[in-house]
Length: 184
Image (cartoon, rainbow, N blue to C red; front, side):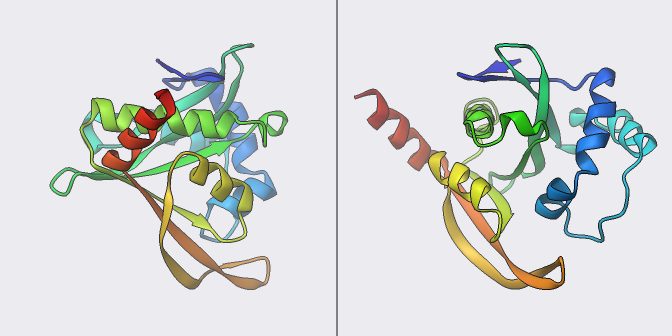
């Protein structure tokens, strides 16, 4: 388990699955996360994902996000792929429990995940993708030090319109400099 100021990143538990399945069917979450057609996600889908979730075999590392104060499961984050040759990784995050949105929990979880990647995996660059309309997420990523690297114009069709997809990145050297500056 990896701990921040507000959250703990831990392994998923089977009892997390029903809540995850409900959150993954939430219209706002589907809009912000899934590029495809918003088709219902079943508990069986979530159970298949859980059973296939072995980081040792596929370079995917997933964590449940738990509120430190209550121990409640509130979302998930992880590393979606690793490019070991070029020392980069792609990350994602979702806070499913709406009571924890906009209160710093996602930012704290991302900061813990970033520290894990740089300190434990020896990766030099972390990337993520976010839709331009997801302003709350972009604000959080910028707080963590991510910067915009590129914009894919009209990349995704959501709710009757095409939207840009933004690629953001954070380099280990920039992250270390920010941390050093924060302690001075």
